[in-house]
Amino acid sequence: GPLPGVVEGERPTLDEIRRELGDCQRCKLCSGRKNIVFGSGNPRAELVFVGEGPGADEDAQGVPFVGAAGQLLTKMIEAMGYRRDDVYICNVVKCRPPGNRNPEPDEVTACEPFLRAQLRAVQPKVIVALGKFAAQTLLRDMTPITKMRGNWREYEGIKLMPTFHPAYLLRQPAEKKKAWEDLQQVMKFFGKQPGQ
Ligand code: URA
Figure (cartoon, helix red, strand yellow):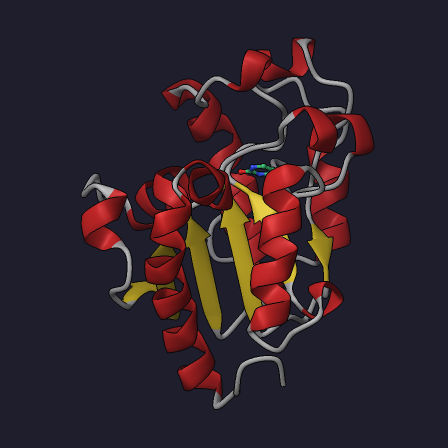
């Protein structure tokens, strides 16, 4: 049938969604990619992190957040008292934009149903939106991330915390303090202590 498991309102499994994605040619990012970067981690995670899109390392390995930004994200996850395998990690677009340019609106539109289906499959308690693409796409709110971050929002009945993207934090380390405040709000929701 048409997009089984990816239609609005159905709750597919991650395997079904990945199968539906197939050797995706739904947008022009397919021409430059090496791997589709679907997502990684616990399919029943209480906490999901959503990034923007794969970079060179992620495209090469087919796994999200394995480059420099990914190493920082892993540290952030561990500082929250989780292991990387405890959470689920995915991106707004699943193929690398050439030269790491921003994803274009048609590319976001093509990929978004798969992200939304992944979130329905995992059913986390909290989503952390990393950077403006994740926050603006999921919330359909074009408020700048500097204003959105640190404030609880709701996505399809799930609590969502927007914060800075780890790649931004690598360029602006002074902003890490604010991101940590945002993550501490998430920890407080789960009743977790740092590093526990
Ligand atoms: N940046 C992202 O937004 N996602 C990745 O997977 C890696 C870097």
